[in-house]
Image (cartoon, rainbow, N blue to C red):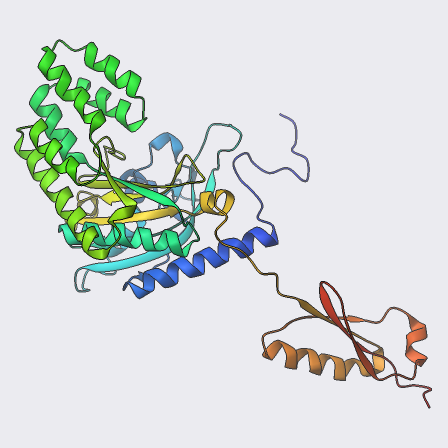
Length: 399
């Protein structure tokens, strides 16, 4: 294997130039401030966690985890999301705090990828977790906050697609009861948005025409509040009925928030079906075909850390917003340059400190031209396109 060149970096990792970092930090500040106004407190967890705890509990598939060994041979992982680490903290350090808990975060996460162009192994997420409340109000809160966070991040045109895992589970158990493998196959088709494959999987089942129509009908359950009625008519399953009732209650709360115009009900939306237990959602920006945020309810996670609590939350896919959405603009602040001769150094650096205290960006440098030291001028200011220059010249040999 050839040695990498000095300028090369591992596939999936990137360098962030100053302009991109400015945009990232502005999005981070705007979104975290928005979350704070909703009562969410920021939390920071380690970059590295134990594989047998956080790694196993994570929603990320095992093959996508970055694994390493410490000096004792214990398997560690680079965090692949923030939800599992936060669940660990909620179950330990925050176990005595009153519920519900509202926590926010912004951090880099790591997922191993195939060596494909455009895929990132390290990226940023900004999100929240609402722990200890299983009501429609809680689910609606995180969706409404996701909408507010996208707007704070500069995403002006977007839609939130909202579904519910329980509806699909109830429908599948009603139509093909006990057929776990076939149910998983159908879920895989919906998860991958492979609707052709989903229909082919239905055709391969030994079902009556009415049952096949039931399973295919879910592909048409996308729209506004009217979907609640259509879904209720599709299945007689108790689980499906309870799930659609919960989802529609969430939608009613979003109407009260005044944000339902951004939301559509999509019962093909299931998220990671091995992880989410209830309402799930994804946000799509007009400029991009891939989601810029995702979230949902995951009521089974915290019990893996010894504290059975309901929880819901979401994460913005911050890198996609940085690269694909142009709502956040960065105004480049003009820099003041102070140049000085050796005998005016103290005056020049004192002035630089004063200007910095006023919020100005200031760089300083020693005058390179020795002839300037005999020029009988104390200081002057010139204005350029990119910077203002203040020159402190030598007072030696003057009139």
